[in-house]
Length: 403
Length: 220
Image (cartoon, rainbow over all chains, first blue to last red; front, top):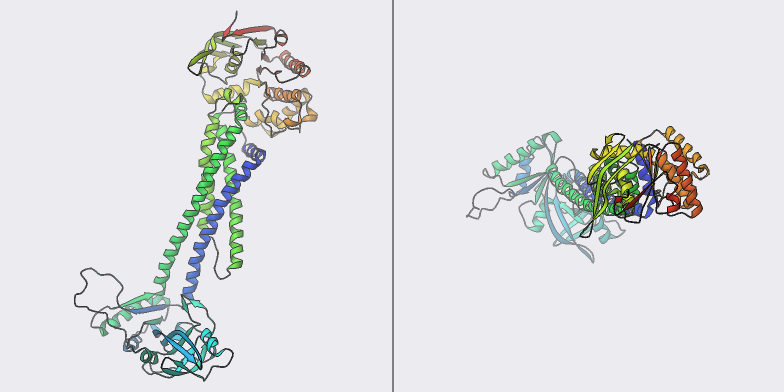
């Protein structure tokens, strides 16, 4: 039987002998593999980006929303039973759980903020001093909201960085009075530049005590409550505590929704993983196309080399060896194409990373393996037909130049 | 010892059945020098292909050293071809991307012969055919006569018992043709059975035995 290194050498001789064909096939395979690498990197990058954003939200966080989001069986209540609002008293009650370290109620609304002639419509956040730790904020100057009793209002506010620059430019803002709709408040601090966080631009906000915001927007409820739990292990217990506390306060009704950061993250994670898989699948189509191209080109190669195949038969080459020789050729072509594709894919990732430094372009490991395995196996599967075609040629006709 | 008994081979050309070989019986001794002559389409090449196991007869038996080789599997027939038969073609059939030495080594490479032994046998073949200085040339850098000498070297490097030459001088000028025939005859004197298909009467006359064929039949 022919020696393996001779088989490989024979395949490489053939690849060198027909360069155009070789380059074309390498290119097709490389594009397929590179697109798998790049597209799955996009998906994976999105996933990593989102989980980074979540971790910037703070750790061990529960988000309490009024109303129940779960669908329950049965007909909807006829009596128009609306969920109870979350009140500041509810918030204070939640604090009784020993698993809760801090909590920050949030009231949100939009209102124009003006200083002298300048006016800007921004998001107003009503909260407490705890928001600073819970939300892991940072100040560029001044101080955050003072520790007040939760129901007390005060005419102070903290500006987001963008809002500060728009209203005051380079002047100092501390101690100045700004107008928020019909109210006035004194600026006591400015947030550090933070950028976007989960679609919330913390640069363009004004933060004031929760009671002040409630009277500004004329509401008694809070929009949601951020609860910081003492440790990761007691997340479940803290969640149960919060639900129990509210149930007793709300006449036995479970009318809040508790989102844990982990649950949110894993939901996003699942969505974005699915996205990555589907992108990978789309890219795999180009691998399939590359496979069909390999088949096509190998069939042409068999036609071109009919006389050579006839000769191989005349020299006493068995059918199986002829198949093996042609399969080796397509296997090497697809392997080299896959390698080239990985190089192109990684260079592409590197290049994109230079342009979008915030977005992580990392191809997931499974995609790399899948790309190479699919590339080589399409090479083999689609190489098999031409190889068998070659082996089945009639020796006499092949030698006389007819296929 | 080669013995053919009532070999038939028909081809379908359009709607017609053409007798490539029509009830051919033949016996050859080892070391014979036989020329096969006849007009084109008379079945000369078909006879050669059947003898070389490249073509399967429709009926009849072919005994090679007493064994009926028509009954062998594809794999075993390939083995017989590899070990016992050497082909020389009119169009040389050299692999264009390989050098003269690599072309000669090809049957040994395909058979899985060790590197050292392969080199040694290729060197011997190159030397005996005066091709040593051409070993690294590719076929397109060789003259027709040189190409056919490379092809002959390739055919005999496996030390076959029979050499089947199908119009080996057909693509050569007269001098190179004579040169090639001399080489083949020299190999025959060393013991190889030589079958030469030709339509050149002058060349055919040189054989010990001449087989005339017409319409697939061997003339008595």
